[in-house]
Image 1 (cartoon, rainbow, N blue to C red):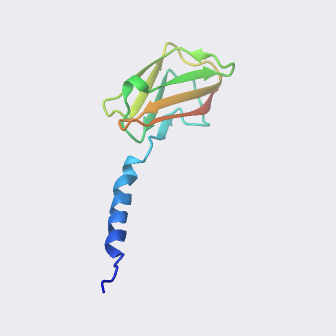
Image 2: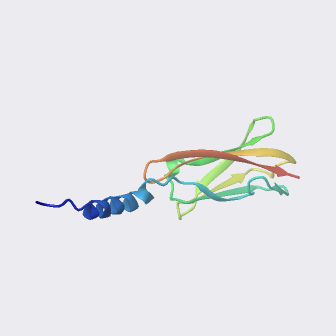
Image 3: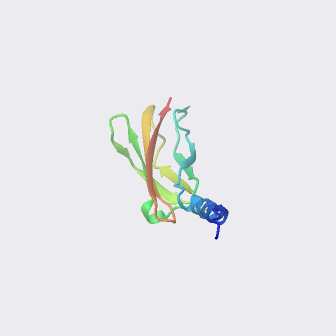
Length: 120
């Protein structure tokens, strides 16, 4: 009579689970300047850094004022593929702003998010 040993199956399941972990991860915002919920002096540059490389054609962000109007901004992706930089034509005026970001990571996952900051 043969005995069933579950140990090999458990070991294979553990290897598959650990190998699949990174592939299931999503890009997330790891830092931003101005930082979320911060109060800053007038700025002409915004920088967002993500946990994964992005696909530039599907990644970017918008800056909106308190009235919900988009502020003209020119965005670019750094060579590391993880940092998006936005250049404004002129410094932001005093007030509240919202950053709406979108990123497509190299594995095809698309993520969105937003945060606010204030210019004094």
